[in-house]
Length: 207
Image (tube, rainbow, N blue to C red; front, side, top):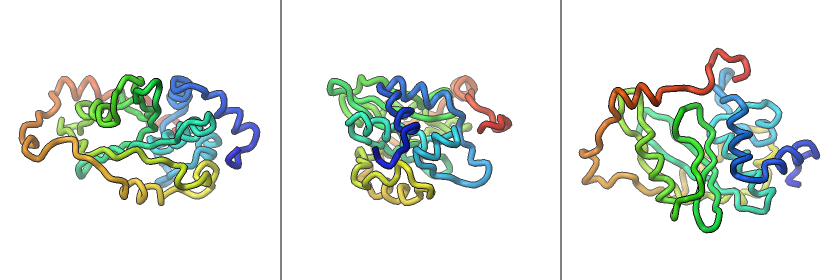
């Protein structure tokens, strides 16, 4: 299916639940893009055995689609000078959850307990801060359905740079009302120290 070979199809079919998808992504190294920026398709992730957040979200979306579920992405935008994040959304019994590939101790998997996409997105807000404690999430997107692109994104050899432009065009909603911006408290030195743990090291040759 989707142009996948039998081995690739079998790998994705084994990822038959959100927990199995997340466990699979947690086992593969983070992609530090040591040889230049990448935007790998699920096929290339399966072959290269590493992924950053968008690449991991695409693998999750492909696995969901193979199961007959919608391949949704959620874009989390930040203020300037911080990296954005993308997760794959799913629903179980009317509640939202998310698959997240990250190298941080937080901003990870979300159990399907959230009543709305906004409620789920808000759960990331307090975890997302820079080394100086500044909280940086600015907005979250409407769910983006990858089926609108066809299925080429699952197996293409080319980097999927166009996906960035497409996600930028999706309506986004602010996290913080303008009147409350001055009320946001920075993460404390203790929080910053505790949450600064990284799962994968750049010195690891697998990354």
